Length: 364
Image (tube, rainbow, N blue to C red):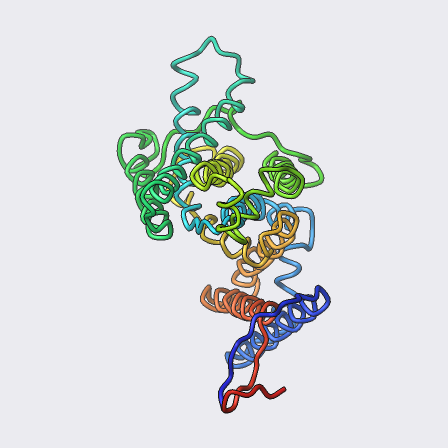
């Protein structure tokens, strides 16, 4: 007798919702057991996390700030995964978006002082999208023309891009007036992203609008256009797509232009909306977390918005309990890890079911 995983032919949305709800409950229970084991009240901890992430305008603003780059990197990863192109390089494409934005903001205005100030933000946005897209084209071209494994290439390119940023803010772009701290000079104020509603949502910038617009456009393209149909067909049945005359090479290149461009835009909104300079700590793993966001959202653009916000609540709340309850950072990280483990594990059972097999016969 042995257990096997059998793929479900029909995925019931109600079963999926029930499994995810159960996974969330199990994660909370496991977290409560962990907290009790170290002598901490789990109910007080969970309440502190919610209040820290959603308790007032300032907390909600901080949560939205954390969610914005997760939305964009989640979209970037999801569009590539739709075609079964395993883009693990959103972190590197994010970094190249940061680089291009910094390049334009730091050196553009001195070189072109006659250019209207209102044009610099659109130029920074375009530069970040192009930089991310070009970085994404490297693994796409290697995959399309030489069938090189995209997972390895995108993963390696992450560390090259991050290393390049570190070289810049420790080296040639380091601010001589920065008291020795690694980082560039501040960007001119007219290159900062404006706030959406400064009184209602403190510090929340236009990146939120960009993320929502990107979601709407991506949903429409993927579900309502011929190209979106081609991408879905290539992901579900590449042989059928090939017989239908759909170009795998062209679509591989195009999908990574879109994916890399979105990740690059995420880098732009992070540095132009919050940091306003290239500095140590700008890379917070949003590209890697975007993979989790896309997977939990089942590659659905609207699902990405919800999952990104939920993870932002968890991240901001986790930081808050370190401050308000004196918990070590490791406890907050373990709580986050438990949630990921149970939710991702539960996702397996939305698509597969366990079967007991004995001597070649299935038992219910």
